[in-house]
Length: 158
Image (cartoon, rainbow, N blue to C red):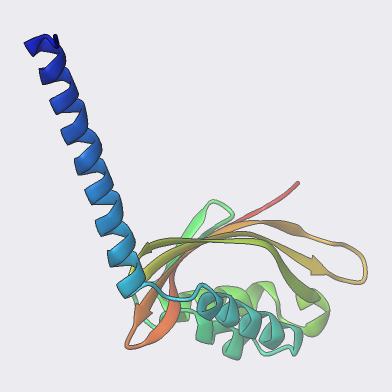
């Protein structure tokens, strides 16, 4: 004969498991109905890489949200705004030689929601005399149907 205590434990566990499955199924359904293809974000990054390697920083900047709310953190400094970010790039990379050839690798896209994702990865420049490289974390948002970077935190390896 089953004790009332054991029945209560099984009922509670069954409810927890059932609720958990419900949440999981609901999460999968929600993600399936609102999911996006991470390739859309990688395409933005591919376009940026091509623009950079063509020496076109302004086209490279098309991957960023053209807003004063854009946040760019690197080298212990934070720039706010699209124009400030562009100005920073133009001052650090005044010519093709300093720009080098850019490559993004080890991209990992984490879906945060229907219109939000994080991208983790590595960047590297190949130049005549050196090969600077590092890591980045990008917060992408889909704004007016386009995926754009709203926050960029880039670091350099020593």
